[in-house]
Length: 355
Image 1 (cartoon, rainbow, N blue to C red):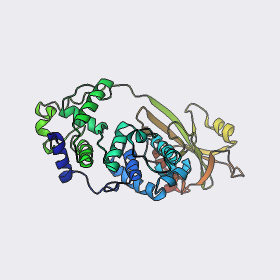
Image 2 (tube, helix red, strand yellow):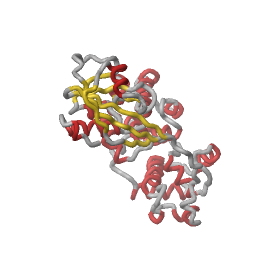
Image 3 (tube, rainbow, N blue to C red):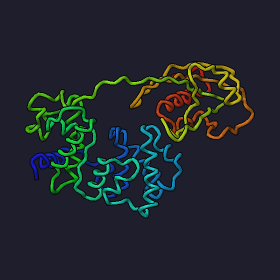
Image 4 (cartoon, rainbow, N blue to C red):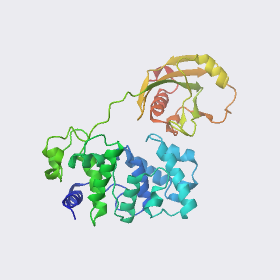
């Protein structure tokens, strides 16, 4: 076993993360679910979602049989919603193509929706003890610093070089603690900023540490301008209910319930009547809500609108009246949840809403 791998394994057994709800199991479903949830998301945020998701969908069959809307509701608030849609699609594919058993072959795992090369390798290592190399964002940083691989880690050439290093460092045995150790090292020690280099088990061979190049490596991509968008969200209230709409199945927040939206430049009265045949009794603007996505930022301008009693509760497909006290518990995006929670706290005093 090479020295790098030996030190990573020894450190993980002594100092790594243990006792997480998806550890100490060979169940590929739990391991797969955790790996997908942990993409772009902190462990502390994932744990409650992981436990609730398993309670609702305890196995692949239950997930495959579920309605997509139910899956999205359980995922609401965790972000990056394409992950949930791909989980659902993959569960259906496992039932259709693999008799409901999670496949053991690496190519079959990699071929499932939403499972890239590194994620497939992690599942194969933890569930089936396969000797596979991982290379998620944190592990890229570990290898780039330790072996002084310069350049943007997202570029094809640099990524190819890092994959070669990842394959070369694989131990002949102990793949599980080695894989977990790389993940733990990148997440807790070799952090992007303010890394704890003195606690690193491989600092004596780390080129970046010895050469004072921690801030230089890994290389950074050219700074790009992040687009900004604006939208108006309508908090349409009738008596003690609020209107929600289901978003299209694809795109941002796909399949989730949300507040009706309209362009900020459009007249609210005109929109209300054209789309819902409703008339406003009163309106009040709330403070703007800013929300960031990976590829753009969004400013929401919420407005509370009391409408005249419509005399009906049937809405067009994809829209519904929901009790104000319960609306924020629906499968809604995080910023909408904030707005609806403020609405629930204000009760009938709509002037008291503070997002």
